[in-house]
Image 1 (cartoon, rainbow, N blue to C red):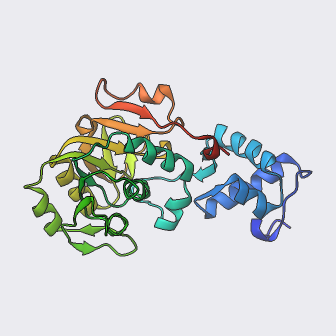
Image 2: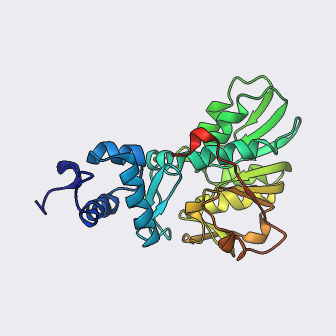
Image 3: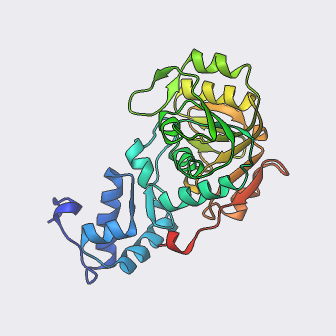
Length: 277
């Protein structure tokens, strides 16, 4: 029995809690994230049981809770999720953050949209629904596709070499283009954030983001709470370069107090009833 994988051995609500949690821990050792509903379906237990187990594992520092489920804790120095993993990780939080970011968009603005973050893809999907004049510059092919054929949006894609497995165009073409750009807002994503800096796992991505920061009047960081109090390998910019941070309420007030004040200013994205699970 002990040699069976979690997917091969259904759990039950009647199983000893310690046994259930042992198998959940094993699952998270091999997988990045899941919703409570998915875990309940996979293991044949109730959603309420999954939530109680995840709460306890989170209190022991074994996983990090999200509104819809949980994510495995990883060393973010060099590790990053695939795009598919990122789409299901803190999905509700990212959607709420994108909606809150939209409140800072005004007609006639020039916006820089970051590459490499699913939250920026969600923001692009929201921007595509607007009917106001905007100029958008991005090196992300998903963002560009979402905003293509929108008569109200002047879209610029500086270009570069596509990073395999992503939508990111990296390299000197984009960085050179950005030297002469002056935008109103740069909506930025990040692999990791702490009270000193924003950081990335890939050097070329970090270099492009620095050029984007330099090209914008205001820098608004969009990051779910699972990315905080971590540091990736490549330092992008000091935290003082960030004007505002939009995140979810999973980032505690105690953690926020470690950041300099008054800049960056924190905005906690409100969750809608359908977001909570």
